[in-house]
Length: 431
Image 1 (tube, rainbow, N blue to C red):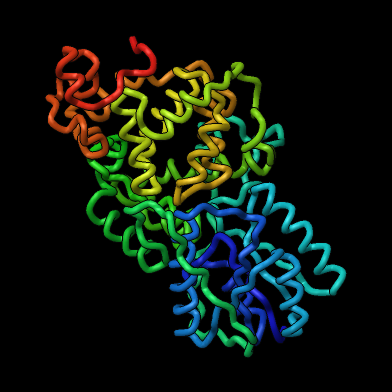
Image 2 (cartoon, helix red, strand yellow):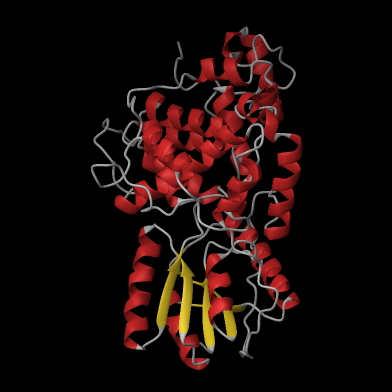
């Protein structure tokens, strides 16, 4: 094959990139391409992370003799236009499961057939491809535990080496990296493959061994914080799994990667996961004022407000806090999980249809939870995972001076002390 196009989507890396590896093995020349599709309305935080990741990817490709072509418009139209311009014989792209990605791949397949261009869809977004593991009765896994057993016993694909040389033909214009937008959260982590790989290596060395006992510690901040890098494919989920699984602490950590794969195979089978209940659940009511207080971290429940304020400040939230805040919105306030999903999606660096909607539905009792009536009591969660109150102090400064005995229940203070705090009374009564 003379010329191939590699369409980068959620695989913004050189290490263990099956699409790039296969294209470089099959073709004399390779054109790496990223399309900014206006159909994907990414919020400021993710655009900021994306801009940094694309800039680094372009630099890494240029170091190997290649380049990154940037286009803006409908992805399929831009891919075919470029393919005709460089006389491409083949197109490589990573598989994905969102409704947008599925439609994009279907449309691209039709166009490639019409123009007699070979299309190859590769794995790479997950450790195990969504359709690779199925229950004995067919269909998809609806419960995580049997999926985890199958995932752990499965044989993973081979790791793909980095191409040493990438020969990209001249393309004019090469296209500009999008500018990082205004309005992003103030404490965002940097995007890019280098930052992601370094974060994983450092965290693995210092904190992986204690992961099982520490990953729910809200104040300890001992989780990997790799979720944004995995979402954008700055690091390979397979490479992370391989690098962790056989080390102390690796098994419980890889269980979280399996949860991610689990929701991708659920989404592949149920593409409306972000719009419709996976299974029937409770009736919801509308309360715009309550929803707004929740978004602003002004519910009067310190552990909930700490999580919501961390989200605004960092474009990220500890996973335990995500569950607590989601449970409060759906179970305590009775507000539709889709409202929470949309708010999270507007701020999260790692915003991902499959993971986010799957987790929201799990908490709301409409998804894959085997105990759909489960409620996470915020006070019990606070006592278990932030007993000294350090997480609350970090994100709710009005309460920073309070003793651990009352920091999670400031409404128990006398009227004068409560007034001095400048912190709202709780929206609902908690037992």
